[in-house]
Length: 626
Image (tube, rainbow, N blue to C red):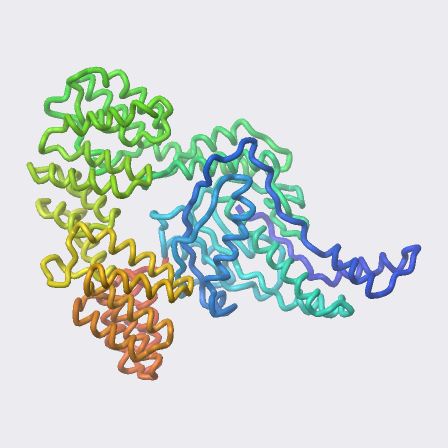
């Protein structure tokens, strides 16, 4: 996707040319006025998008998880605020024109391993670190270039139709020094504003450029376009043809709800019927090849029966079985309208299978089902046999698509009750457990798996439940400090909100949430860990240590409590004492890579070079970075 790179000088040539042109002018200006004029000519062109033809009825929120490496974080203590500011700058552009808003799911420190000079390697590392299956994008903010460049793909990188992108820091002392030298008559504040405007403009243009690539937008030969491979202060907009691709790509990505793979067929159609003399033929052909390969892959996919339930068999009539199999194939292509056409002729039959009817619960956005869909969904639930959880699972999935988590949990609990009435295929137990985990209800996930026979998938899900309980600080069922199963999802929601408050420095709000949750739900071990983290973030090491030790006493298998305790010891200068809790954090959650790296660094600092090498080797096996 990268074009040939072209080095561009800093500002000396441009400023000198502008000054020379002014010397030959027919009128006389003061040196100060001349520099003011030059500063205006050096200011960036505002970035705008063509307005949508019709107003968006509602802004669609898509989620981003952000990682920042060590060098990028050095730019300021609240590095999360800097990353958040870049997302907001992007939102100010895309929200009015596209009806899309990006919101940060969370911010993570990234202890990067790859060569910072090879941005493609950095992108590959990010893809290996976090697949991003539960968010729409994963952004990585990484080390600035040592040498200034305007080649966009030396300061940003993404893959066509990918979920990941990496962006370098844009700070440039050379540019600031050039302004100080060539515009020395201006107030320092004026030079700083010009530099800040140029930096912010470059940040948003590069971010837009790479983000657009993930949605299928090609490079442009026009120097004023955001998609030109070379950054310019004149980079300001997309072409109309670019916008066609961007809207098609975003629509495809936004429709991939409920964890489905993205169906790029609409983008392929838009690309096949669009042309622009700004596009590069080779790149257009390459994107068409990628889209065709994706379509072939999707056509060959077989949907896990744990997603749609048991396949047709037994007392299924041939018309029902044929319709179900047809719908099953279409689910792999996200073609809800076609699924409805396959199901519709069977809905009038009073003996139609409930599993076929319940597929209507999940057909979001089909106009013909706006009023009929809920009735058919309820009919499927009413006609479901006592031992068949599948219609209720479909109804729960449909509720999630409508972002109604409370209703989804109601249907999931009904599915659990129906599953208990008879033996189920493994896929149904797995589907129910996955659903309960998505709904933050690990105890009910455990119940779903209780009757399932051991298998690789069932064992993996049982391990996922254990990990979830550890991360959220939920004591095992039956423990005096355990929560009732029906309260777990409310507790986890409060836990997540508190973690967001930590990320954003809202310590007063976090304290209030912890106090309210403690009053309502007692001494849940995870609340003690949150109290420890709050005290630690506020540099109250004594209270932090007391809270973490209490959390570990209440539930010893909380990796975050041990991890925080290790950092408390380090803050107190007790490196040797930090070793054991850091090891314990790694043992309890080996999938988290940062504690491994911090353990290795701690071992090196204590002169345990051999142990550090073994730790890094073990980390690559347990939590690989690539």
